[in-house]
Amino acid sequence: MIEESRLPILAAARSIHASASMLFPKKDVQSFLVPQLLSKNRISIGGTLIFSDHQFFNIVQKGFGIPKIQNVIVSPLRSFLSIFILWKFGKFYKSEKKTSQGFAYLFGSLEAICTYLNNHSKIGKIFDSEKNCRLLVNIAGAKSNFLISYESKNGWSVNFIEEKISATASLTFKNHETAREASLGSLDPWLALATGDILLAGRIPMLDKFGYISRMVRNEIPYPK
Image 1 (cartoon, rainbow, N blue to C red):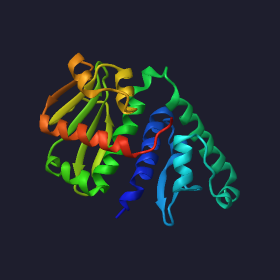
Image 2: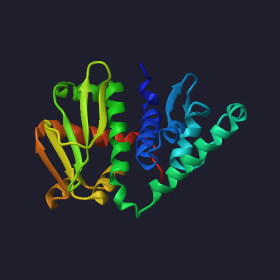
Image 3: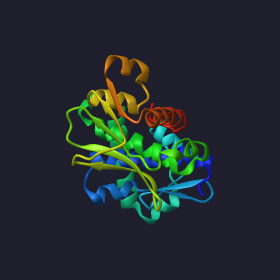
Image 4: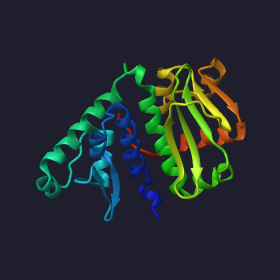
């Protein structure tokens, strides 16, 4: 069981990996950002780049963190590539003009939420009664969607799907910019609902819980500033 005190670090790392998988679709590039929590408050990025939790927090929030030097020496090329992709991702994340990449922001945000659903005792209990339900998250006019669902073997997961599929509830953002703002926590959800920037359909209690959980996760995980 993952220590809940380390969940913000793991959720941030998985969020980065999910978002980057949409920005850099090649599988070999994605492998450079695969996260894994290690003992002694350390986290591995891409299998060779290792940070203390504190240094990883710094690199996410401030854009600069110092990895464990001995691991960089053992695999210098792979470590450099992991750092380079992290840097490219940081530039994208801070950009205010990437309005056509709402899916990348959304994927990262939803992956962080699923990480908490599977590993945080309070948040997991809030959503426990929704295990037989499925939530569709999309952007208006787009043919692709995100489906959040539960499986007994893997727990809650988010998958990017390109076909039409039925779900218990749906959450639709008006456009890519609205999705981006929601993912960054800069969107007023009540105002967005009133103005039609967010559309809800289906099981409202599930959507209410999801919105509450989303705000809890956003308040805990580090993100670029």
